[in-house]
Length: 96
Image 1 (tube, rainbow, N blue to C red):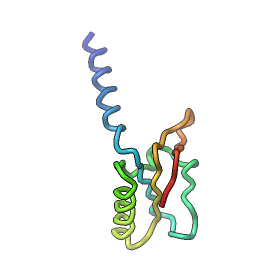
Image 2 (cartoon, rainbow, N blue to C red):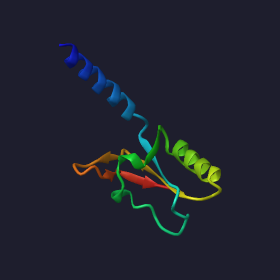
Image 3 (tube, one colour):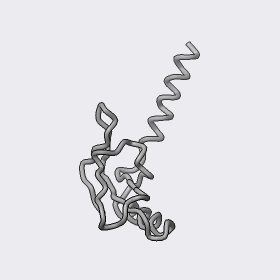
């Protein structure tokens, strides 16, 4: 009985951690802006660097991460991102 309660509590806690904002920041430090585009469909959930309530918040954080890295890397913001059965990331909309 205790084990079942712990499993339910753990599932609820993990669900709360993944239920962030509607916009997901995907930051790739090894891509140069304008060189290559981030291929979101080839990424998994661990590519997400944060969750934000608005597109503006996501963009500001992405720009901040680029500045901290010396203007290296690139980012994209995905709306309502989810993973499929293979664990690949899919978003309803993408914006820079």
